[in-house]
Length: 317
Image 1: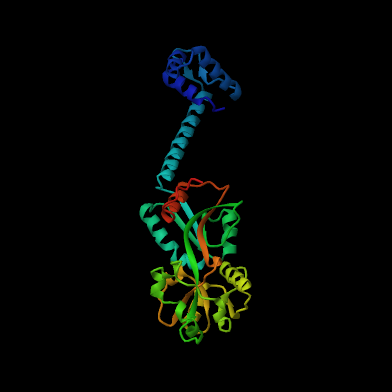
Image 2 (image 1 turned 90 degrees about the horizontal axis):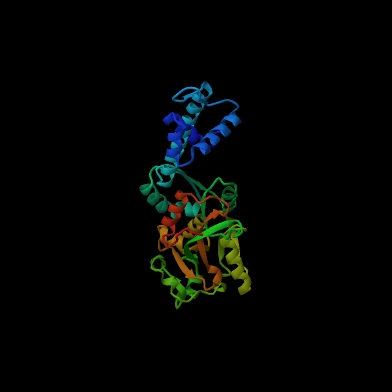
């Protein structure tokens, strides 16, 4: 009914079919035919053609009032879209596990807020299972995790790479048997352990010590179990917990050995009560990714956040 409303508006403004046709760069017969088609669909004439210049009928006046409202709404929508594209408005929902929420996301979020203060940011922290559920349901736009999510469902952008280390209480006697493999927190901060020539410790040197580990179905736990299987050893798991930071705190108190990522050591306030060891195994290396759903629209806000978190990535996948 309002398809072709620009024709009606032009005739209304010019009060002439001939002048309106010239402005629209179409023939007068074509314009007249288009107007009659609209009038037929409405079921009433829009113009009184018996007077000169032509005038609107009562139905025509209401059509023009409605058309003006539609044009105003189009302008308002275009303004809103312009603001979204310029990030003067919008919304972005992010999610991460407790560790990433504490140490990795904050600097990215701060940079994003400084650049785009008018974008509303929501942040959710939870387990990988919760995060994937919310990402799949569209409650979250982007998730950061070191777990491999289904590539058939999710796009991913590599954020950084991390390495798993043994964190051993300095008081444990087993440290004497592994003195040549020891690392301090300062060594980890300097990436000494990432030098291929620095030796990895055989895990069997600690097989009789107590371990505090994460529960099953956690990426870190799955990786350490895979290492144990290949080395044909069984570790002494005395506690199974939910958070890597909790296992590390227990190591600081001398309760047991924990398996932590070097990212944690670089961000935590460490002390001499803990000694670190490199694990020379492919499972000790893992990538941390930003994930978003494949069939979801990649908004400008999502693109800009990805560029901040992964500066070398063009987000064009």
